[in-house]
Image 1 (cartoon, rainbow, N blue to C red):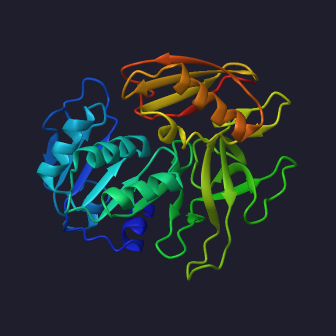
Image 2: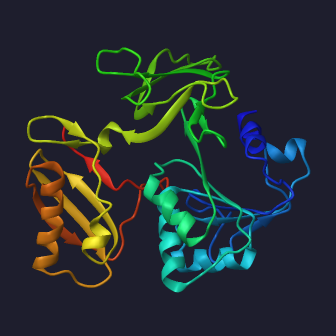
Length: 315
C-alpha cells in the first residue's frame, strides 16, 4: 500500500520504463552484467493492480562505465538505485558528457541522500531525486513528499518518534534518535524500538497531507564523528573533491584522535595534498586529527551493496 501511495503521490507514469540498479544476491542470474535482465512489467506491487511498462535490472556491482552505457541503451523513464551508486553514475556522466534524456526522476533507497547529491543530480541530469526511508525491521517508515519535500511518516503502519537524549520528543528542526513501534508486527512486536538512526524532526501542516514529518535523515550512530572530548558531530568531507582529485573516499575513525582515510585518487596525491586535506578537517572541527592515508583502486561497500563514507569504531 505504501509503495503504491508513493507512486501516486509523485504521479508517476506507470506506462513508462523502470530501470533498477541494486544489490542482488551472489550467484543470482538476475541482473548479471553487462546486459542485466528485462521484464515486461515493474513487478509487485504495481503490476498486481496495474498494467505497467517494462523494467530492466542490473547488479550494483557492475562497473560504473557499463552502468552508464546500460542506462543509455535502455533509456528508462525512472531509475531506482542507491545514493552512493548514483553519485558514481553522475560523476561519470559529467566527466564523459553522457546524457540520459529519457529520465524523468531518480528514486533512491537504503542510504543517505545529501543536499549535495540532489544538486549534482540536477546539474548533470536535470531530474529530481525522490527518496524513501525504510528499515528491514519496520518496513516503510517515511516517504518524501512532492509538495513540502519532507519525509512523511507512514503512520498507518508505525508510530515513529524523534527523541532527544532525555527521551523527549524533538521540536521541529532538532536532531534526535529514531524510535519506532510497528503496528503490524504480529509475530514479533517491536515497542519503541531504537533502530540506530538519527533524523531532524519536521513540521506538520506545511502541505495538504496531514501525516507527521521528518525534515531529513542523517544516518546511523556509527556514522557520527566523536571528538576528543566525547562530543559527537555529523561529519562532512564534501569539500575534499575541491581540494584534491579524489574519485572516492571512506573515513574510518579508530580512536578519538586518529582517522584512517581510504582514498581512490584520480592521480597520485603528494604530501602537500594530504596536508591540505588534513588541514581542512582541522579548520572544520577545531582539532587536528592524526590521519593515516591509504590509497586503493576501489573501495567496496558492504555485502548488501550499501556504502558508508564515514564509519566510527569509537564506543
